[in-house]
Image 1 (cartoon, rainbow over the protein chains, first blue to last red):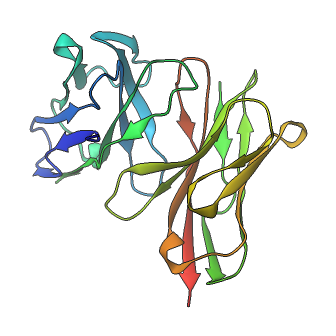
Image 2 (image 1 turned 120 degrees about the vertical axis):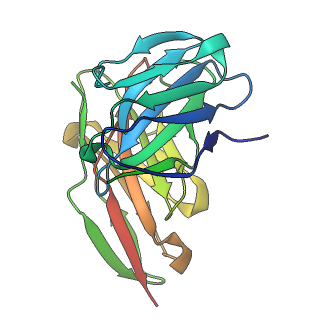
Length: 115
Length: 112
């Protein structure tokens, strides 16, 4: 079974530029998550989708971050414009469903460096 | 709101020695508890999880964890550490909506 795919793996941009990350979850998984992991910290949940609807975006900085999950499968996370403090690894995860007993499976992440 | 504290930022153990990584959580109801491992440049891999029932949970790679409600703890243990166990370990707490909150992690170094 294929795991969670993410691209690109690495991205370097200058501040005020825009960037987008892509995630393809495990086939059949209804719930998709985006996390931000700053160096030396644990992952922080940014947004949670159930199929193609947002169910939790309470920690998403909505002035610059946006995410969508069209058709309830792939998802993109965008930052516009980027700031230095956005340098982090962005992790995508998916689970079969939303209930707490459903294991979240993580992709390898996209490492973003903002100069 | 739920939160997780991992008191040890970095732990060094000798290969073959036992290991215990500490995790304390704060959650208003019965929590879902998880331990994940992250190797350099890799995503997170689930080691084990607790939802209910037996408070001693067995996981992959020889790891186990014990849920102690009275101490709000979920410590991870391994009787004999291997060099390949060197990695970052994260404890997480979640609720019915799978809204996990992670601790800051503990970095494990294994001495030969």
